Image (cartoon, rainbow, N blue to C red; front, top):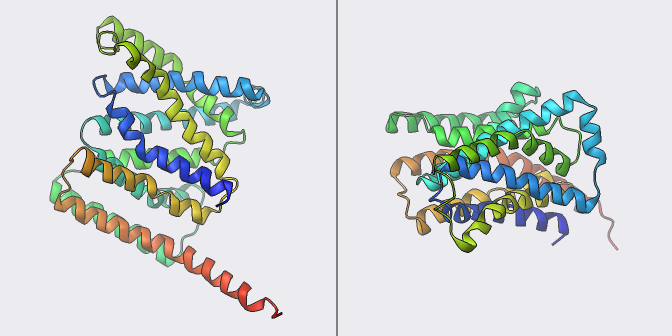
Length: 300
């Protein structure tokens, strides 16, 4: 396998296994974990930039106000995504998180049509309609909106849309995204410690290493993704992406014994059907192109 797909595959596997890491810190408040994740991610990405001696992007952003505010917006969106994800994992809603990332491509294409005026095929519109029908059925059966899945999925889709307009490299982008959030993160951590609601008295000995590790497990997959996405086709990247929510689903059901209800089954069924409809045109187009290439190769 080529390097690009290996990087992408590694990224998605790490993201899929990430709930296990956050569960080891479940004794801490979810907002405190989010703040620690932000602060230590900034420390780690600073170290990466220093080792690479990559400062040109920082100078570029400091001289481009629009770029800075785009990165600040991206930071706010990924903050929402990270925060609700950590809360969901540590409060027995890992299945909702898994569903969010299955829904993400559908939410992303909806956003693409509204923001970037991207055109969808009839099959893709059908995929969107199927997923929306699943949401309606779930709301009727549950009597409530699956807000956890929608917030996680839509915040990540919006984050991707903002990142589409960013011009600097991935490391510089992540540096500013975390930089704008870190002051608030540090204030919240300090406030929590003063109220005896932080890590003091909860973590002991080697457990303190888990907080800086939060920055590493957050940043490393993003760096793998940033490297791999340039070397991998979008079709293959899209297909491999479902490793992440599939691992989350399996971990939620078999490791943490979250109940997979009939309503879950109905909603997942609608979403998976929508995904098949969404992916099918791309796969058929790729197969058709490959067949044409094989037919025009001269016989030896």
